[in-house]
Amino acid sequence: MAMSIALKRLSRSFSTISSSNPLRVCVVGSGPAGFYTADKLLKKHERAEIDIIDRLPTPFGLVRSGVAPDHPETKIVTNQFSRVVQNERCSFIGNVSLGSSISLSELCAIYDVVVLAYGAESDRVLGVPGEELAGIYSAREFVWWYNGHPDCSKLDPDLMSTDTAVILGQGNVALDVARILLRPTFELASTDIASHAVAALEKSCIRKVYLVGRRGPVQAACTAKELREVLGIKDLYVHIDEADLLKTPADEEELKNSRIHRRVYELLSKAASSGASHISGQRELHFVFFQKPDRFLESDDKSGYVSGVRFEKTIVKENTESGKQIAAGTGHFENIECGLVLKSIGYKSVPVDGLPFDHHKGIVPNVGGRVLSDASGDRMQFEKGLYVCGWLKRGPTGIIATNHHCAEETVASISEDVEKGVLIPMSSSQQKPGREGLLQLLDSRNVRFVSFGEWEKIDTAEKRRGMLKSKPREKLTTWRELLKIASE
Ligand SMILES: Cc1cc2nc3c(=O)[nH]c(=O)nc-3n(C[C@H](O)[C@H](O)[C@H](O)COP(=O)(O)OP(=O)(O)OC[C@H]3O[C@@H](n4cnc5c(N)ncnc54)[C@H](O)[C@@H]3O)c2cc1C
Ligand SMILES: NC(=O)c1ccc[n+]([C@@H]2O[C@H](COP(=O)([O-])OP(=O)(O)OC[C@H]3O[C@@H](n4cnc5c(N)ncnc54)[C@H](OP(=O)(O)O)[C@@H]3O)[C@@H](O)[C@H]2O)c1
Image (cartoon, rainbow, N blue to C red; front, side):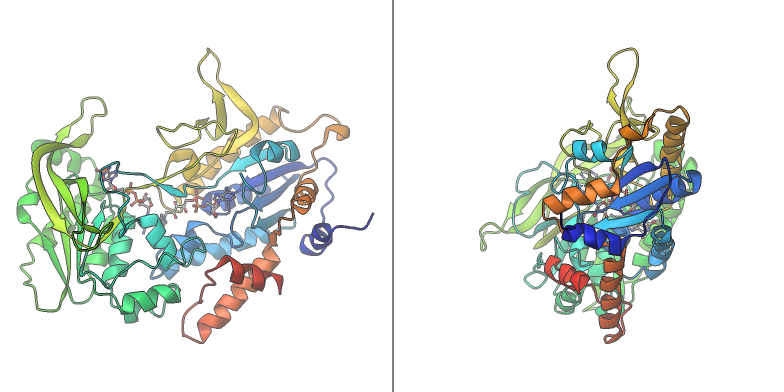
């Protein structure tokens, strides 16, 4: 029988390896969690052969599509990740989506070990009236838009019909988004920001940004370096109400126990007391505390569009169950008028068919990375050969390096199971097909996968286009362009 196109590409795209009794591993997701897992497995297990699949034709997850364009130093980690795929026992197979190109049960039948590291690609919802109005976006969508993710390149947020944006949440993502809206565009133009975003930001009428937290400055979720950066934006007027900085004894206790919160609180206090006055034409950043979103207001002039947010004033009080200080409504309301709202209240993972999932926590239930199928009886039951890592395992918090430790734990669990003999088949007749089986299945479904070599063509094309504009790269932002360049 004639060799299929996919299998011909396979022999060109991947080096063949010839371990007699390999451990065939598929890592789903090529973000930090996926790459750290692959790296550690390769080092720990000489017989491991690893395929990293990703639904995008491009690797690196949020390092490419989340990390802000004006943080190029953070993206250097992609060099380390690229070296992982250079190992002949490892490959990247892009444009393959778990859940649509291939199911979880199919993947588990093909590989000895499956590690799910596909992150958190949805959003927490507020569940307040008006959330569906036009002009309200999740921070994830907005970030994907300015970072050129192909799913959001057509988002086209209207930055011209309003001078005011409200950002809900005060974590580091909220700060990234505020910075992108407020930073002079000439400073962004030389980054790898998508060109459609620079063009829109150049014409933007947004002058005033409200960063709204439901709790106080003591509980702000951002970190000091990121806060300092937004406070340091050129020609920016920053407003913080000094009355919000008053601390309760419980706040004092909280600050005593957290260096990060202490530093953030100090920076906010310093900014509040700086006494700078607003100069006409200056862009403004307002930190608003103790306000929780109650509903979104619809415009009278433009039906279906947001015209503001109604907030309920809160006080912060201790929750006896969690021991944490939480926001409680006071029954007093106030509105902030705006034409753009960015909800930056956290990401959310989504399950695929057949995967145990804790909908409350938004994670795959696991113990040390082993996927838990049942914890109801006396003994915990695990899904054989199925593991989890990164945001899908812990929830959507933590920086890139956090996933390093997370991968260490998951790989330790895999290693233990290998040593116990749980994972490798006893006889060669029971051996799973691994990569060859995957590619045959993709071929039968006409799924056009993208190899690492083909990603390198995209990389080269983006860098070449960037050079013409004095940018590190000009990202290809549509599926069509990405797949076209990969095929050239
Ligand atoms: C906006 C933003 C900015 C950030 N900036 C920084 C920063 O400056 N510094 C820092 O240290 N940390 C930063 N972080 C945190 C850091 O990005 C995360 O800790 C890290 O990316 C999480 O890694 P992950 O591998 O779990 O998920 P991701 O990085 O999200 O990787 C998941 C991968 O899985 C793929 N995938 C999704 N679904 C499927 C599927 N069904 N099938 C196949 N593949 C799939 C995705 O395409 C993606 O490549 C930022 C986070 C965000 C949201
Ligand atoms: N430069 C960097 O290193 C960088 C950049 C970006 C992101 N990251 C990391 O990526 C992770 C995700 O960041 P993130 O900003 O998405 O999440 P985050 O740090 O968890 O912040 C979420 C924010 O949303 C608020 N919030 C949650 N639910 C809410 C609700 N129902 N109503 C109102 N507000 C609500 C939270 O307030 P409460 O505190 O009251 O819950 C908090 O202010 C973090 O670990 C972050 O440090 C790092």
